[in-house]
Image (cartoon, rainbow, N blue to C red; front, side, top):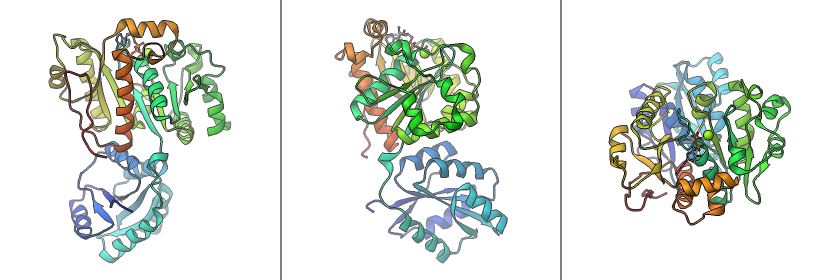
Amino acid sequence: MADKISVFVLSNNQKLKEIVSLYLQEDVDFEFVADTLEHSDLYNEVTSLPYSVLLADLNEESRFEQINQIATDCPSCKIVAVKDFPDVKFIVNAIRAGAKDILAYPLIKSDFTGTLARLKSEFTTPKNNQKCRIISVFSNKGGIGKTCIATNLAYELAQNTKDKVALVDLNFQTGDITTFMGLQPTYDISYIFENMKTLDKDLLESLMTKYKETSLYVLSNPPSFEQGAEVSVKTLEKFFNSLKENFSYIIVDMDSGFNQKTTYTMSISNLVLLPTIVSLPALRNCRRCLEMFKKLGFGDKKVQILINRFMENDEVSADDVVEFLEKQIYAKLPNNYFAIMGAINKGVLLSEISPNSNLAQSFKELAIHVADSVFTNKMIIKLDESKLRYHNTMEK
Ligand SMILES: Nc1ncnc2c1ncn2[C@@H]1O[C@H](COP(=O)(O)OP(=O)(O)O)[C@@H](O)[C@H]1O
Ligand SMILES: [Mg+2]
């Protein structure tokens, strides 16, 4: 094992963190990660690592749910529950929630190192490249470019990584992925939600529409309004869990607005792309979304800003946008109405008809950037005004 295994501590107890840090100071296999992470950041962090250990202080009941989510979604993270005086009932509940081991607080060094040694032996080959990432494209404004971005991003991801990509239209009322891609699917998402009980990953894939000779599979919105009116979190959870087993990337296009469906989907996403155009109302709106994401506990890395329809000589510059939103820009997509409408009207994706257009190139770069950042989660973005490009400057 080349790299050290990261050990995270989920606790408000400073003493616990200090003692873990002290015990691991000279450890050759494990290293303490000093950051205090919000749940969503922690989730993103552990799902992006091939192996990790999470010491979860379960004196707080609310953490059971958090560790359960991590244990379900991320088997490469081994969870150790920590509690003052753990009793049998606690141990049973902690194991059910996904803990691999239990330690009493205050930690005794020999118990702690013994547990880590056992966990180390459970880590085998890195699982990083087998995992699936969910990327949702959201705005609470319509007409901002969500569907253009979701469809072209999904296509470019499939073409450039050759991994299997699922494109899901969760916009039940005004979803138009099928129009953008010229598809006439036999099944739509409402059929899947209605037949959830019998659904497994292979059946799910067989009900999706493969896009031409690519590794992109599409799941369209229902043809009529009432069919997809309601969907519970439980249904969505099962649906995404099945999808995750067969795909490397899931791209979700959504309706505009915060509701149970969009909020839940974004909460389980590894990356939320928030497109905006450079106009004052859109930017104000974008800022409100960022505030909402903060309230929802989404970490800074999870939500990323895309400037769509960017124009080099616009009155408002990219720097102004950064200043206004107090956030770096993840990527910029140039304004090219002629090119994108040419593709939409033919029901094809942009690089199928205008591969050399600046917008098609930017979608390709965006896909590479997304693949890079969701699987390493270590990105520093620098704006490069002259080239309309991002730079991923961190080594992997
Ligand atoms: N980069 C772009 N350059 C020019 N026009 C664009 C661009 N992106 C989107 N558009 C235009 O905006 C319209 C709305 O895009 P769409 O993806 O349907 O938005 P949303 O899904 O957010 O409602 C498209 O029909 C297209 O005309
Ligand atoms: Mg749309």
